[in-house]
Image 1 (cartoon, rainbow, N blue to C red):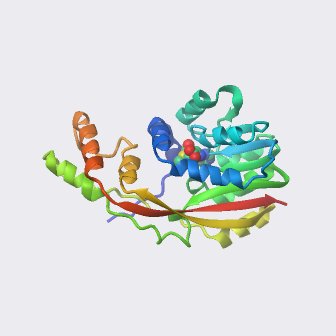
Image 2: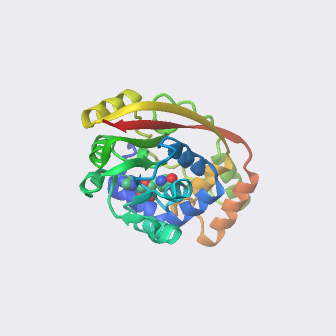
Length: 269
Ligand SMILES: C[S@@+](CC[C@H](N)C(=O)[O-])C[C@H]1O[C@@H](n2cnc3c(N)ncnc32)[C@H](O)[C@@H]1O
C-alpha cells in the first residue's frame, strides 16, 4: 500500500481557504481554541502596548482577544489563506493590518515587532524557516509565544486518549443504508521536540525560555465536527443526505477525549 504523502505548503493553505467559514464557526462553538489563544496572550508582558504579529492568524481570534486585553497594542495579522483574511477583515475591520504572507516571509515585511504570537498553526509550518523569519521581525527582548497540538510534539504524541468517533459516523451511515466511512489516508504528524526547537531557535537568536504541556478534556463529538469541515468528508454520500448523516452521528456520539497542547515562550536575544 502506498504511504500517505505530507501535503505541500500550497495544499495546506488551500485547505484552510476552503474550510475557513466552517473553521470560524467551529472556534465559536468549542472553547479550546480561545483557551489556547488566551494562554499565549498570558505569555506576553501584562502591560503590553507595542506592535504584535499574529502569525497564521486565521479569522482573527487571537488578534481580537489581544486587543480586548491590550487596547493600546497594534497588530499585523499574517495569513496566506484568502478566505481566512476576508473573515479576519470582517471580524476586525481596520483595527489590525492584514498581510498575505506565510510564516517564513514575515522577516521580509520590514516590520520590527515587540511580540509575535502563533496559535493552533505552528504544526502546519516549517520550523526551520519560520523561527528565523520570526526572529528577524522581532526587537531584542521581545517574546514569541507559540503553541503546538500535542499530536505534533514528541513528548505528547502518544498521550491523547480518544474515543473512536468513526464508529458513530459508521452507525449513522448504516442507519441510512450507506457504506461505512472510507478510512482517510493521512500522513502521521511530523513530530517536533523541545531540543530541536531550542537548537533552531538558538541559531537565529530565539532563546526557548519556557515550555508548558497542557491537558484538556473535550467531547468526542468535536472530532466529527472537525472532520466535517472539509468537503471530502462523506463525499461518497449524496450532498442532500450528508448533513443529515453528520447531525445523526453527532447525536449518537458519546465520550470524552483527553488531548494535549504545548505552549512555548521564546525570547529574542
Ligand atoms: C487552525 S488555523 C488557526 C487560526 C488562528 N490562529 C486561530 O487560532 O484561530 C491555522 C491557520 O494557519 C494558516 N497557515 C498554514 N500554513 C501557514 C504558513 N506557512 N504561514 C502562515 N500561516 C499558515 C492557515 O491558513 C490557517 O488559517
